[in-house]
Length: 401
Image 1 (cartoon, rainbow, N blue to C red):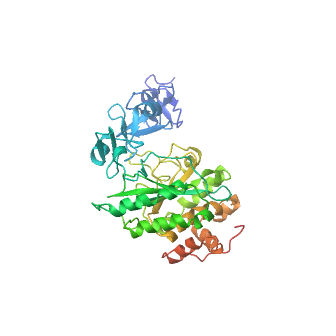
Image 2: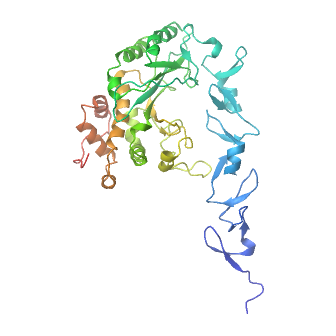
């Protein structure tokens, strides 16, 4: 007969290891699990398993329900905290935590709103009235013919420094009126820019339409001659939005993202910018500081609105993928090389097959050779790749490129 003192052994519902009754835990859903597989929500104190969805809030683990109903993520610093203590303050079209509001926002008594430091509020815009609030988003006007529905828009941040007179700054603002009336581009406030500056946002264009956008390039060059800077600042970047309609399937989107994320060194060299917290290349591979895995490429393909915004490629937008890792640039050839890189990455991966992927065609060497073969379509990108050290343009012969 068995010893009465022996504990009856049972199996953990998660890992199937044998455990004694005394060492088991019953979750809120009725599962019996071992100590390694149980997890406690530190908000509602319900218990679940390690394979449930858990979220880092402050320095605690919360269940999905509590995270959804009682947490708040600051749009500026991306820190998630308890919404009962800090529900966020409206700053432009974003919600910021108390620390970010205190350190980086200004309150206007006249219009009763907070706005980002160095921006202007609703009642104190420039004399021409053509710098829009950060939340401004007109209906897009598409320029150019059908290019596999591959339309791109870019956001160029530029700074005029701390010019107290702002003469050239205001002149540059006035100069954009005709371009805005023609639905080519417009200007927006951006609190991340040091000194007096703004963000130039273009309506969607095809690559060919950008090549022919003489007035746009003349305006940007005019801003540069008036003292605007972007490349040689610490706060300005260039973001390119690629239309989701350009991708033939979810698999195509996955191949595109794989090309970008498997070649971070080369992508950053072409972009002229290092990995930063605002355009992370490591968010799909590494756990965060609390040990919670970050989003995978599959998550980024399938879940618009639920992945990390400050990624090398932001997939939170409903209609575009945003490539955020480019350094700001005021020169036509620099901006065109960024647009060509985005266009080439979409087209290179469009008809790639599973055997092609297994062959290694997502490696940089294959892509670089394809760009070299198509240098007539991508002249600025090809020149940029030729000038950047350690970017190879010599590779094996491509198959089914």
